[in-house]
Image 1: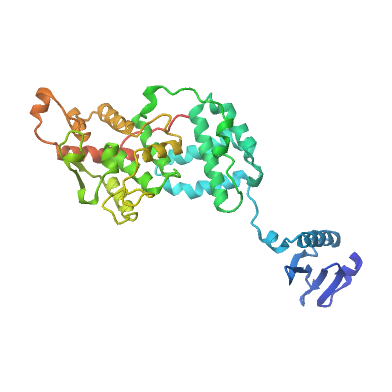
Image 2: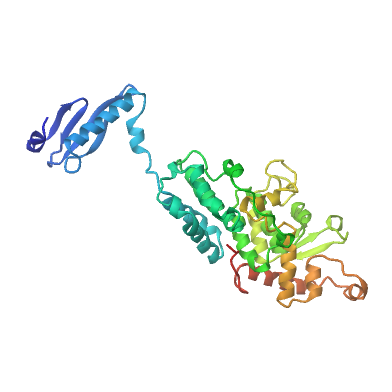
Length: 386
C-alpha cells in the first residue's frame, strides 16, 4: 500500500497493508488504521489512529512495536489502556484535592502547596512520577535538611504524601521519599528542649497535620481527643465508653494521677471525635482500642508515632499539648484556678483549700473557648514556621 493509494480508497471496507496492519474505511468515509494481532492466542483489533492524524509510516512503526511486544509475551492493548503517567506537579494537585477536606484551617492548605512550589517543583515538577528516584528527592531535601530542618521535614512529608497517592493509583511501585532515603540524609541539628511543646498558636495547624498521618485512624482520633480535652495520655488511652455520659467524661479516681474522680466537659468538637471513634469499636469497652491487639488499649508509643509520622515529634511531645493549652490559658487571660482544674492539677496550700468545687461550669466555658480557638473562630491562628 502507498500513500497515494490510501488517499484514493473511498469504498467502505478493510484493506490490508501487510504485517497485521489494515486500513479501515467507514461508510461515512472516515479512515482509520487498525492492527489485527493475535495476543495470548486470541485475535484482537487494535486501533492505531485516524489517517488524518497518523501517517502510513507512523502506523507501520506502531504496528511493528506491537508485534515485537506480543512476541515477547506482552499485551499491547494493556499498555495502551495504561493510564497516562502524571507529572509530579499534576500528582501534587490531585493529592492536594484528596487531602483538602481534612484541613479545617485554610493556612494549612495554602502552606502545603507553597512548600512544594518553593522547594520541590523546580526539580520534580515536570518529571513523570514513575521517573522520580531517591536521588531526585535527596536533591530537593539535602540543601534544606540541616539549614531549615522543620521545612525539610514538611517538604519531605508532602512529597511522600504525593508519591503515596501515586502508589495507590498504580503510577509508581515504591515511594522515593520513604524510609529508603533515611540513611542518605544528613543528621539534623539537636532540638532544644523548649521546642518540645508547640506554641499554642500553632496547635490548630498541628491538628490538621495530624489528619494527614498514615498512622491508624484510631490513633489519630485519640490524639485529637487528647488535644481537645487537655487530658493526659494514659487517661485518653484507657478511656471507656462507660465513662462517657452525654457531654461529660467522668474519669474514675483509680485512673487519675491524684486518685480523685475528674469530670471533663466535652466540647462539640470532642464529641465529634467520639462519634467517629464509635465506628471503630471492636466489641470491647475501650473508646480507642488498639487496631492490632484486639480488646487492648493503644500502646504508650502509638500517639508518639503519630507525631513522628507527621514530622511534629522533633518539636512536640504528646504531653506537651497540655503545656500548650496552659500557655493559651495564661496568655489569653483565663483564670488560673480554672486552667489548673481543667488540667486536673492538685492545688495545694490556702488556695487549694479555698476551692472545694471542681469549677465544672467555668471549665465548660473554658473548653468551649479552647475548641473555638482550635477551629480558628475565636483567635488569631498562625502557621507553623517554615
